[in-house]
Image 1: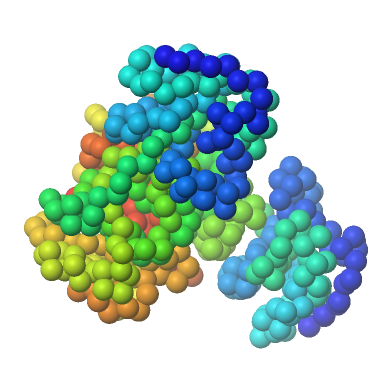
Image 2 (image 1 turned 90 degrees about the vertical axis):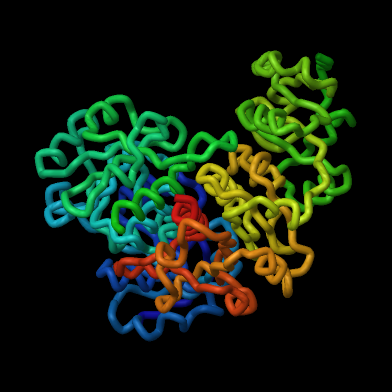
Amino acid sequence: MNVIEVADPADDRLADYVRLRDSSLRRSLEAEHGLFLAEGEKVVRRALRAGYRPRSLLLTRRRRTVLDDVAAEFSAPVYVVDDAVAESLVGFHLHRGVLASFHRRPLPGVAEVVADARRVVVLEDIVDHTNVGAIFRSAAGLGVDAVVLAPRCADPLYRRAVKVSMGAVFTLPYARLDNWYNGLEDLRRRGFTLLALTPAPDAVPLAEAVDGDGRYALLLGTEGDGLSSRWIAQADVRARIPMAARDVDSLNVTAAAAIACYELTR
Amino acid sequence: MNVIEVADPADDRLADYVRLRDSSLRRSLEAEHGLFLAEGEKVVRRALRAGYRPRSLLLTRRRRTVLDDVAAEFSAPVYVVDDAVAESLVGFHLHRGVLASFHRRPLPGVAEVVADARRVVVLEDIVDHTNVGAIFRSAAGLGVDAVVLAPRCADPLYRRAVKVSMGAVFTLPYARLDNWYNGLEDLRRRGFTLLALTPAPDAVPLAEAVDGDGRYALLLGTEGDGLSSRWIAQADVRARIPMAARDVDSLNVTAAAAIACYELTR
C-alpha cells in the first residue's frame, strides 16, 4: 500500500479531486482523463468489487485505515490529507472522509448489454444525475438486467449519480444509443416489446401490459415532459401506473421507475 | 385583486419571503407566524383549491398575470417585483416567478385522519424534506388515505417538501403522533395491521403480507438506519420488497415507499 501524506491542496497529485461541485469543470476534467469518482467507503468497495481499477484514493487522516484490508489489491497511491486540506481541495467538508478516482472502462455496445437480458430499462433524456442514480439503484435492486441510455441522458458515472445509486451503476450493465431517432428499432428487432411509461389516462395499466414471459424494454422519459412523441409513437404499448384522484396527476420519475421495475421483475 | 408593486427587497411587507434557503431562519419564522410557502403556479393553485387561505402572493413582473383568474377569490395582497428584487429577497433566482404565503391550519388529530382510512403510511423519523415530499406525492397519487408522522419527522409544509410533493401535502390528510414510544398502539387498537417495511431477508414479501381487505398501516423508517427497533418490535408483520442480487442490498426510502404504496393500494 503506497500511502503518501499530502499537505498542499494545490498539489498536482490531487488534481483528480479538485472542486467537486463545479460541474462544468468536472465534466471536462473527467472526460479528458477518462476517470470517475466514488465517494464513501461502501461505494468505493463496490467499485473495487466490480473490477474498476483505481487511479488513486484520497482519505482523511481520521479515516486512513478503513480500506487497509483491500489496499493490497491495488498499487494506486493512497493520499492522506487533513480535513482542512480535503475541504479546500474538493470544495466542501468531506464528512465521509473517503474518495477514490477510478479509470473508466470502454462502454459496451447495446447489443452486448441486452444479449441475455429479459428486462431492460431505457432512459430517454433524464438529465438529473440524482434521478439517474436513483433509477439505477432501484433497477439493480429489483432485478432489471440492463439499462440503455439515450444520447442525451446524464452520465451514470458522474459523482452524484454514483453516490445516489450506492454503486449500482457499477454492477448493472448499461450502454448508450448513438442514435435517438431510430435507436429503439434495434431493441424491437431483438425481440423486446417496447413499453412506454406515461401518465396518460388511456394507457394500459402496467400490470396488464407485462406477462411473465417475453422480453420487455421499459421506456422512461424526461423529468418534466416525459417521453418524446417520437418514442411514444415507436412503442408497442403505452403503459401507466394507475393513479387515485387527490389532485395528483403523476408520480415523479424515480418513483414511477421504481414501481415499474417492481412490476416488470415480479 | 389587490396588486402592489414593491421595489425594495427590505420592505416589511415582503418579510414572509426572506432568505428561503436559510433553513433555520425559515423554520423559526414560519413557526412564529403560522405560515408556509408554495412555489410555482401549479402548486399555488393546488393550495388554493385545497382551501388554504393566502397571506400574500409574490409575483415577478413577467408572471404578474398568471393567477388573475383566481385572484378574485381572495383578498390577500399580490406583490409584484422585479426579478432582481425577488432574487435579493429570497436568495436565488426565482425562475418560476410565483410564490405564495399561506396561513397554516390546525393539524387534525390522528384519530380524525385515520377514522375512515384503510391504507395509512406512518413515517418514523424521515428528516429530509425532499423525501417527505416525494413520499407524500407517491402516497397521494397511488391512493393512500392518510399519513401519520412521528414527532421528529420533517414538516410536510416546509417549502422544499411542498415543492417536491407537487402539492400532495395539501390533499393527503396527515397528523402527527405526540408520542413516539407508544404512538403505534393507538393505530393497532383502531384495527390497523402494522407492517414494518424492512430490507431484512427473513421478512415476508410485501405482496404476501397484504390482502385486499383489512386496514393496514405501513411503517417507514429513517433514510439511513430504517425503522427503530422499538417500532419493528411493535409491528405485526415485518415486510420486505424482494431484492435481486447485484450487490445492492436495499432501495432508497422514496423508491421503497412508492413500491410499498403501490402494493398496498392495488
